[in-house]
Length: 452
Image (tube, rainbow, N blue to C red; front, side):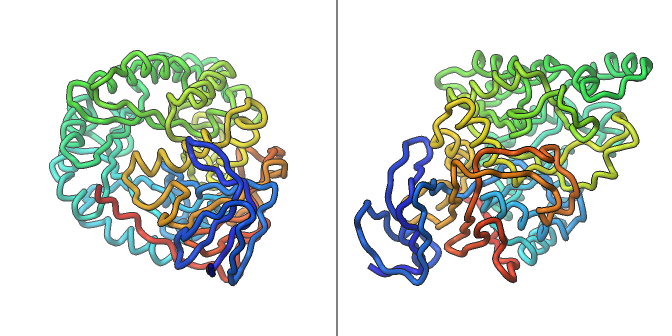
């Protein structure tokens, strides 16, 4: 047997199934063979993976490319992703006219991204709902997002005047008619938030915990109940994106029922590793807010039990300068795409004993299944050779200066995480090796046109 690349003698992680020692033979960008220990093969290049995991490359389901330096983000953020074992991403695309603008945004990404990519459409108007079926067929986008945090005055401040419960239900009805359709929802009750926010501001509070207190977890939970209940009535699969509260997860568990529309749950690495008490100030401002340690543990339990099915980064590549002058005026969100796997290995596998195949399912297989991404997310013959090779006992020191991101800071700055991504392989091409991006790394990412 002869291959272009042989990933040799590693601990192969099969998402949701188990770990088995062996080698992978890669030819023409795909996995051509899974070899048992002792089987020999020839290859133009061999990577010895002794004592390392060979995992499917991560597919980050939650990013905001373009929020930093617009089109240039595709180059800087995809390269940053490659340093963390991420071989694909889905990014939210919002525009008043999706039909007219999406081609140009896709072409900008094709010209710059070194990893594969796809889109979710942000639905903010009745027009979007009415055009959804045609947009889905044309662009291969099966997932949309409704932003309940942009209801009322909050939405009007950003130019969104049509976000309300009627738009939510209309989007669910439209999503139910899409083959493979799923509606993601940002859950926060912004109508109640001012009741808590104004006294906090009047008291001079500007600490990170105040951001949680102005939008406490039960305001997310209330929206989660409404979305889940509406989804059952509309018979539409939904995804509660970036879940932050343990109480919200409890509500989803109660709403799920055999034969009902699926209620999926996504969380993000910061909700699994950072809290409102982290000493990072306004750097940690994000929507929904960072919560308590009890919420962190509740979400980890959801990962371990399979109630949380996908994990992303909510990556926003803005500059540190946007995080001031105080908590109330700081931008929300932060970069995290390169830390997904190191955080999960350190906090999930080592600290809490969660099986690596469970974590791999949340970052690869389940993402591919939920969003109808073909030939990715698994290790099997015929699948794209998208791989992350990980030294489980290595160390990742997070320093923003070591990433090419447009963003110049990290909420994980200075943390030493147990677990190190040593290689990232996208469709058989080595994008990163021993912490260094491939010389001359350039565009080469494919657009993920999803057609279930």
